[in-house]
Image: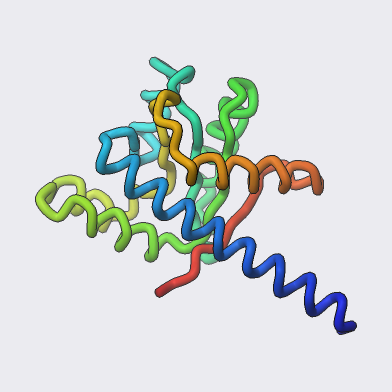
Length: 160
């Protein structure tokens, strides 16, 4: 690899790490403010009733999750979000997301149990009035990814 390629790779990796941290902070803030819908079924219901309040759709799955039903749900959610102008981000690092969101709501046993069972594959960030700087950073990353012909921007969360 040339020195330029190595530098580009390093810059891209740093950018993805920065956006990953921004996404994590955004999700934690949204959960604390009760502006986060978690779960495929819950997200589909919310999108059906109030799509205008959704500012970000996060679809989370790791590469080893080849569940056909999950992929069908993702395709339908992506299509709906694209038609509605909702920013979409595909994320890998489901265990990291589980720990992150479980640490926010230690008192909510039902929610924690559902997340332990794996229903964390879709998350909607709502409340467009919340002008969160991390939302802007994630949104810019998604727009930049779309410019390089990624239909759905992707991000890998680093385990810490």
